[in-house]
Length: 268
Image (cartoon, rainbow, N blue to C red):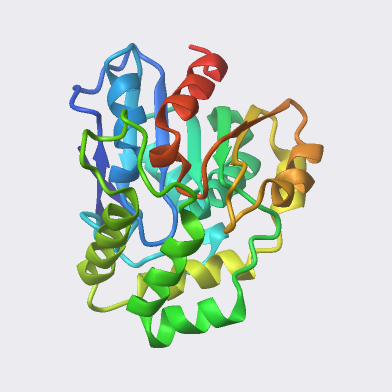
């Protein structure tokens, strides 16, 4: 589906199903230099099991137009505006990494608009190493290789991920290169990393969240180790933590475990 938010077209993948106003809606928000496709396994299942699914491309990423958000706060305002554009009084927000900060900040700013909240691979603060932050600006292709080394814990994918022969790390690298190339005007890699690195409002935002919150952490995540989420877990009013055997790319490395956690948590 295409929505217009702040005057720009926004793409949202629906899992191959038409939007049904009678169903509850899940809004998925990806991380830095990713797009909607990182949710492909979870969104397709949920879209065919009674949920509306909107897996967005952030502004300036992939199929979405507009200026990429330069801060978590700006991205959160954009996400709330997306709910308005979609005619949704409320929805469940599900975010990964950078997307988790955006979803959390949106839930803090508009608590009545968020039914439940799911944060995958999150941290507070979400600091980016100075070397990686600089490389994302000066040598983005080198930085992409660095991120992929830190993001993946498995040399071989589980059988359920996209099909036999899938190379998870290679696919992730190709996706990041494609998203980077999709916006020749702005380095969305550096912009996203800097937004994560600059964000200091995580703990105070979590204290304002009223929705029940599920944290999903990869036990071998080197980008956002599970202990980095603890400041948020401790401040969640109705929080639950699930750890899966994966690195930072946990939706691809542990697709069934992530889906099982979502299915157990989500309430219609």
